[in-house]
Length: 113
Image 1 (cartoon, rainbow, N blue to C red):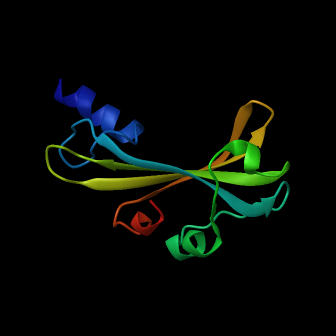
Image 2: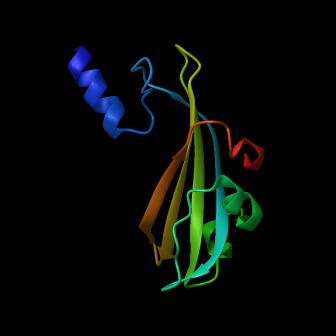
């Protein structure tokens, strides 16, 4: 059982990498990222996202050809470990074409949620 939990934690953002427990989702929000198709540049700096993300209430508010970001925060109920996952995607019709996913583990994006 221990090896299975280690593998699951390594491949799933919602499993704690510290104690290997399933984490609870504590927040979720959608944003528009002012970059257009063909001009996406990956950033690992949380400050970039805090300065540039624009909150939206639904994907329909994002103009065609502009990237979206979904932010989901997780907290482990066993040890308290926290992680925030930022997923960059392009909304195309009824699909999400994922471009990038970045995890932040020091509460860097808490002020956006």
